Length: 246
Image 1 (cartoon, rainbow, N blue to C red):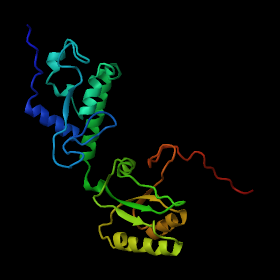
Image 2: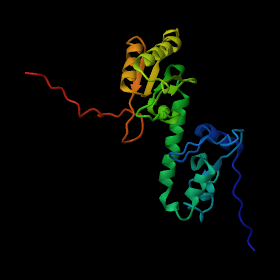
Image 3: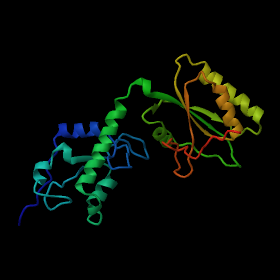
Image 4: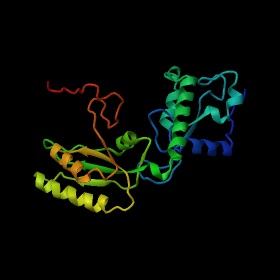
């Protein structure tokens, strides 16, 4: 009986390089799961799979005559979570993930990690989140959506939160906004830059803009309901026009 071939061992230096290039995150497009922490216990744990783009055997998923040569080549390896490792090799779906597409996933992910980790401190911005009840409801401003909206900048460690959910009138809201701005922003001698995200009543939002003034380096972001995100888009304001009286 023919002995079953074993998957070639991937050298430790190749593993280390792949972990560094991937940032320890799943390289499947849209996943980005951090692979060295348990999602429930938060304890350190290696959850990564090293997936082959071209299978290490010619008869495997996307395998070909070069399979053996590519078995331990870093250009042919992706760091993935177990879910997406199984997905791309599943016989039912393997045709949906050809070599060229997986190579594109890997290239995009590793270029993004290289670019983001190469940013200097000047790319750090402080996030201001302000929210209140709107028609009795409170909307959440998610951290992931914020991080995506401010790219290529990155959020500094602690956010400035202005919680107006218990405020019932404009005067009380103004006082709370003023306290937050005086405490966290105007007293800051480091002259930080700010990105502002608001899910609050319009008068509250207007007053925050007034309180910040034109001396604070800040950029405001709008929530777009059609795409459910905060990303500004080119040409978004083509529907505005100026009408001058005769």
